[in-house]
Image 1 (cartoon, rainbow, N blue to C red):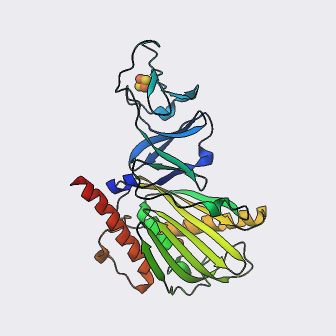
Image 2 (spheres, rainbow, N blue to C red):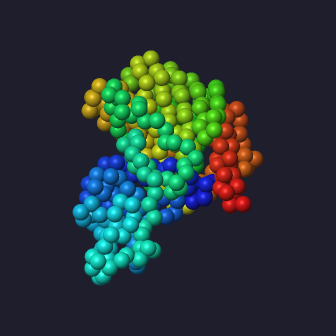
Image 3 (cartoon, helix red, strand yellow):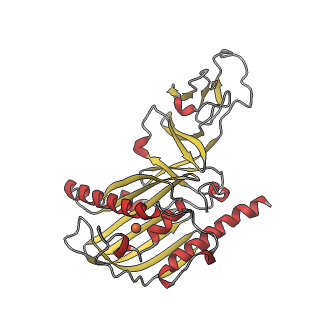
Length: 325
Ligand code: FES
Ligand SMILES: [Fe+2]
């Protein structure tokens, strides 16, 4: 599945950290091969197509004036609904042409990230983010990593636990036997995968046996909850399918570290290195898009969750095909 597959329009996608969208400044982003912007207008987060309807220049180069977005070229102003409220060359009392408006998209904040959906009818909700807000947890981010690897491959990699003792031998994987015994269950646009793993990390004194509970939410979100004797750690893999040759990948973490800055920094450094290890090999793929034909690759029982993930993407792709007919 490419990053611009039409079925992805009905899905929610993370596009930026909330912290990247300060008050008073629009932020341009790329999603599904298109330019969009996010901005706070009157305290409300909005998403608009990043193209002025007058002469098609990017509105993200403009500024926010009186809770409206002002185009930098001829000063048209747009409100939070995308409606043009002022054409300076005409003055305030002249009717605005109905065509002078900008598309808007659904926008939400969750997991400290800004999410967009380019269709009014999303196929599913964004994953629940209550563990991210649980006061017991300290949260931090690794990334963003910008890569040519498609969003589907990155999600598949995050769900794949048989590569730990090989690709991640230098960070956390050396103690894992690399023999997953998976329980996999699909429910609509979600997959649950349960596995037993040895977990190692900068915040642990030694590797601990743990139960790994993965939740995949179509199309590219993967939550990993590691239930270990000392507590539960959450890692979320979030990918923005920016363009066909570009994805942006964040890993958001919520660990119970009692606010220990040194431990948080150590865990963040380790997880960044883990991301570098994954991209080292994935960036070498000839075609870094996920195959929508399950016969195109070899699958074994160690790949049960990854196989189910491909089936879910195939079903997702079919939703666009059925809408087109
Ligand atoms: S191009 Fe935006 S106002 Fe003219
Ligand atoms: Fe990995």
